[in-house]
Length: 105
Image 1 (tube, rainbow, N blue to C red):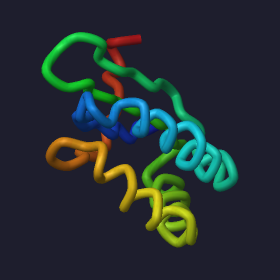
Image 2 (cartoon, helix red, strand yellow):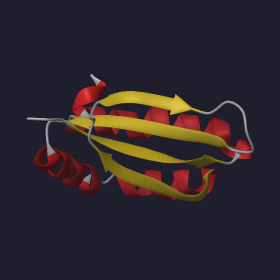
Image 3 (cartoon, rainbow, N blue to C red):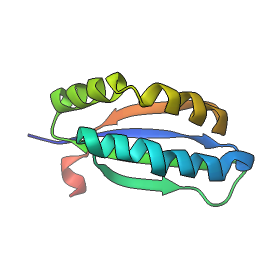
Image 4 (tube, one colour):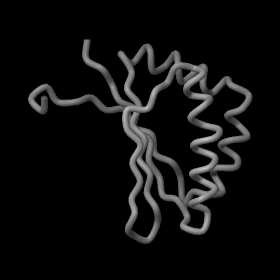
């Protein structure tokens, strides 16, 4: 069975960068931990017009991704988080499902 990766990315308004990090670390990541979603890698761009974030989460398969994402979206803490963090983002957040290439190992 090959794992899949959820890659979530977007651009952070520089004026709201501190607020984005606070919301991400104090609200989103604890919710995800409670549900069983664990970050594989959290990246931030330090130079550029906007701060770009890329969060990568690993799942066993698409079924686990769907199950845990449904739990995340049903959590009552998530909607207020998205309303607040949306004020920190330029444009929209992109979510992609990716797999690694066998020859990349």
